[in-house]
Amino acid sequence: MKIDICKLKDYENKEITIQGFVDKIRNLQYVQFVILRDSTGKVQITIEKNDENKELVEIIDNLTLESTLKINGKVSINEKVKLGGLEVIPSNILVTSKSLPELPLDITSKDNALRETRLDYRFLDLRREENNLFFRCETLLEQAFREYCVNNGFIEIHTPKIAAGAAESGAEVFKIDYFGQTACLSQSPQFYKQMAMSAGFDKVFEIGPAFRAENSHTSYHATEINMADIEISWINSFSDIMDMEEVWIKYALDKLKNVYGEEIKRLFNVEISDTSIKFPRITFKEAKEILKEEYHFIGEKEDDFERKEENLLCEYAKKKYNCDFIFITKFPFAARPFYHMLDDDGLTNSYDLLFKGVEITTGAQREHRVDILTNQMLEKGIKPESLNFYLDFFKYGCPPHGGFAIGIARIMMQIFEIDNIREATFIYRGPTRLNP
Image (cartoon, rainbow, N blue to C red; front, side, top):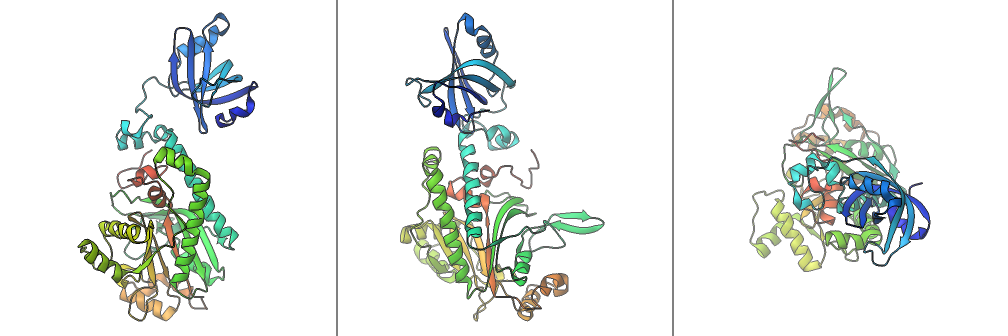
């Protein structure tokens, strides 16, 4: 049975089997050193050049970097070895696959190749230690999100990814042929989350894909994304949603820090955000005033924020509250979907959560009263009959409810302070990229 390299210290002076990639080769006059790498670490393989090891030496003489090996040998403690103070003395080496001698990119550092080249050969790019850690952390983050929900009585749902129409007014969709009918890939589980509220599920969540046919080439957008969605019933206001999201995010960040905090600091030079500080909350109007008075900046959008404004507001939150997060509330209806509830002033009971300069969440209390919802559809230029199935959810009693959605890659890129979503996605899809 294969032993993970990180566990070799438990097998001192024992015969073991390990497998991995050839990370480095040093072929000296009297000895050969091979650094073997698996997803848990690296270890030195030491082969003395003598008659007993003649076959092993010949294998190493013809070995190429990034080939894969299966090695049987004994774990030996050697304090002179920098990699954990141990080495493996092999009794047998099997080359399970041999790499071509010329790699299409140098995988020792992401700076050694253009991003597009690394995306073309993503399977090689992902072999870097920091990428392996990144996706381990993403796994833990999603696990923590799910764990919090399950521990707090949420139901996990799986909504359709083939839909009859758009879930968000104004957004572009990928159209597909569905047995002669025109359908589209789902942009969001929004309508179905709300259906779950009407079904009496009270609290639901989903972690799954969404598709956005937006011809956007920014560093924050992709056409296929992975989303975590939440919806809860019987709320008193959208503040209940913000309260829940704040606790949910802090729960996940604490898990991440406890398990991988030191490795994140070593490989990314990043500290996980302080979760002891309450996320500040300001209104959209207050935010615009702060941008004008504190930073002398007036954006072109009157009813929404530009990227620079989001960055400045996070700078303000860090300076004033020492917090990497800030909630912005009460957005104008013009910038929000038809299903957001309005207050007496015609502003939405909605919010954005900004994190280290970028919006990571839009959340809101939904309009659950069918007559008002119908009027808001008309105000947005949407024909109610086009969404009859959706309006039906609210005709037979529906609790006050609300929720939010968060892009997994986007929050990950902000946690790790990565400047492009392409680096934070296992396989990126954008307007000009369909491969690999």
